[in-house]
Image (cartoon, rainbow, N blue to C red; front, side, top):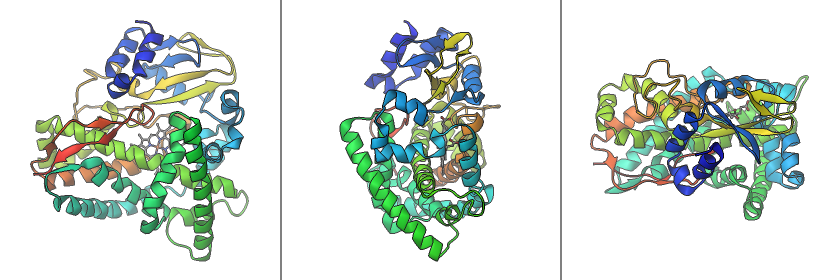
Length: 400
Ligand code: HEM
């Protein structure tokens, strides 16, 4: 089968549910394959993906490239919010935003959050223990945990979070597949969120707290201030990037565990093994399966030409299962040595939230297993129909 036909199969409902046979078919044709149409090539071999992500000539989708695909993007507040954030900016401006924002996002702040994470995990486990019969792990645990942790990190009051979550998700949804109806919902959400954060920033300037809204409100105040738009975009981005991705790490990881009861039992008995388990969940079932890059100059990847102005599809999830890099790539081996997956990307845009999300998962899984010794799947899980963000809509489990 040609690479183009494999990609078509990947973008069917079945392909999104189980992309891995399609990744194997791509590996069989080499690390990179030329395409015609929207993308000039698909990059899926581990070394090739790593090289493209680390090469600054390959840029993240930004306003310049988006204008080629959607000249009217400025009319959409949802896209304006996204395009003002570091995830969609290249070059010096990216470096400036990343510096101003990530210097507040330190290991110290994450370490301080570990206590909050443990408290939130135990609170959710207490609530689960009160339920009888089948529960949806996504709704009851994987969704509220990261939302509450990011809420605490930013300083979004607990009572506002239920309102806040669907607004942020609606903005993110335009990236999956924009459509007239999605834009209507996302644009309304972006306008309302901007008003919300404007108000929260004003409150924190008057009454500072130890949270990200407070420190970012003051970021670069002396010489190089974040503009109000940049500040709003940064806050929306951190919530957006840090919330549902972590939900799917928890859901995907739990499904792997419940399908490997012996490995689950080992973790239950030896919670200190959690770091290796979490890295292997991230490699095997990446919550973000793909990204894209584009080039402003004529370039090539492994001999495949990428003309100026064109984009490449970068399959992180396929790189993680490249048999040339990982022995038996489709099997779950939590003791795997040298497990340098590309789930958090690489290079200039490497995920600054990696430490936080890994901390959440390392705390959550051993406590969950210890609390429910007979935890098991109780039905067939249901999956999101997306690869950009891959995970469950429902994960039915039985607790005892
Ligand atoms: C399992 C959880 C997560 C996964 C799989 C993940 C994945 C990623 C990936 C793949 C990128 C780079 C995309 C690219 O190179 O095109 C990224 C960037 C980013 N992530 Fe994460 N992420 C996760 C959790 C988080 C958390 C918890 C936060 C914040 C609290 C966060 C904040 C960000 C930000 C701000 C960026 C943009 C960085 C830049 O463009 O320089 N992420 N993430």
